[in-house]
Image (cartoon, rainbow, N blue to C red; front, side, top):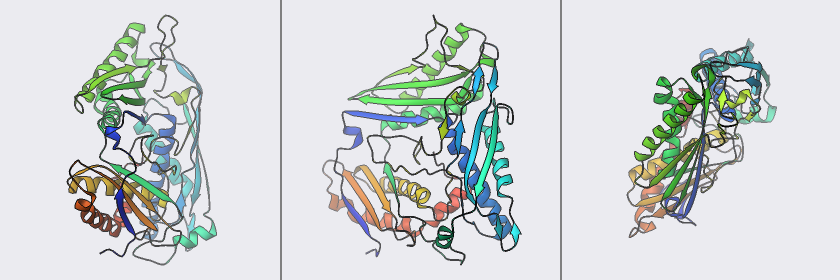
Length: 401
């Protein structure tokens, strides 16, 4: 029996798939909030790798307060212009000197931000359409002490906080997540008129699913209103095909529902993101660690992106709880819905949470007692390997939004 405080009990609700109404949202990679998440996490990864290269270990830092102030643009068929650039401020803390060695943390941050933006939002001209600034202070003394200077096998938690994960994804969740990823992947590779700012909202009532897509179109690749209408219809058809891969339920897809063709009011952009025209952004205000916003499920309000991957519970426990939930559902038969909540206590080893609370909905005919021991064994094993989450984050193997 594990010495860790692991609890397994029935969940206090129906499985989400069995609830009458379900709501799911994903903010795509070009949404202003996701831009902040992506930049913050890129900077965090770059700092972690640089610290390892220079001193052999990850030093104290966090960049999870990054903010975006929207610009102003004048889109036009065939190509408009950005009138007032987007402003992005990378805010946080970083170790800038270690054992007499100066570490150019802000230079590292700016380089990482530029590389991320050029890859993710190619229509944005760095330094012209978007201006990036960085303000990284030094870490506070008490948290640096918790972070520790002595080499230990398992770090101490930097905070008393919690993370939440769940599995398996419902059909609606799968559709919302997969549709955005494929639109910004295979679809965008052959349809440059689609910008990366794709927001998707899924609503299921009973067995009917409505998917509402807000898709920013890039003006340079659209000659007139007819081409715009064709682009919108193409997105609608593609999302419908994605949905068909995941459900037999009736699905209706709606794209850019605020458009008014007669008035010429359409979702046309210069850069492919609403950040160019009045839509601000902030780290942690969008997708949770599993890539979705899920009001039918418990969620942590902690921002995952930009936090230190060594001992920052706001990052580690959100990623770990998701990993645990997925592992349990993959390996244990008879589970319809599962929620994992991990609570830390500041200064306590991160592999020994204050409590690991697992709530289970079993399939009909399966009792909790039938799965409890297997669930606890998997939770215990994953907690014992918690530092693997740190490695995966630093190596860029895990997404945080």
